[in-house]
Length: 167
Image 1 (cartoon, rainbow, N blue to C red):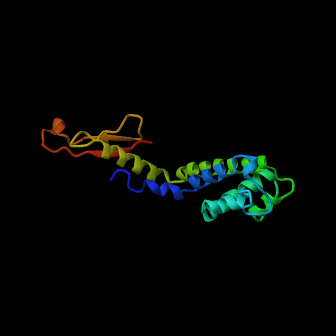
Image 2 (cartoon, rainbow, N blue to C red):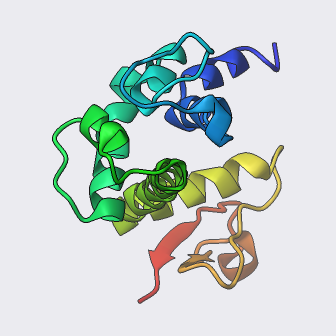
Image 3 (tube, rainbow, N blue to C red):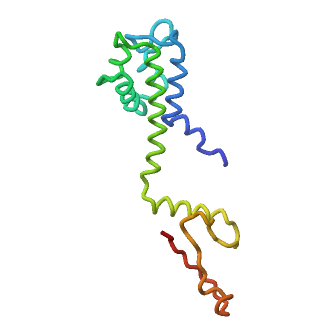
């Protein structure tokens, strides 16, 4: 089915982070000193646990808290319950966490060896051609297709293609 597995996005760290952000969107939804208080407010850890994101979000949020505050917190609770921490600080930490996660996704793609990126791009282009059409790549690509044995050149019915990497 076309939408099989789409509900798996709920367990993605970005989805969990978005749920935490919504739970703590206003100062009236946030508290200190307890995971959840009698008024239904959550501290940062309480919101993370309420969305089932402790395993996925603990390290990136703690890292962001250290970056934003300039302090070396060992636990998220210490950041949340610090007397100097405000609701605005919590929102800033969540925003920084999102930025760091996005940057990590981008940089993890960039860390792939160049040849693997080219192979993936080449396979994508070949799979899009559909049928028995020509598998030529765009001129901007670093690959070119030469046909030294094509029937136009030597009269044979052979049509082998040679793939060269241009430097």
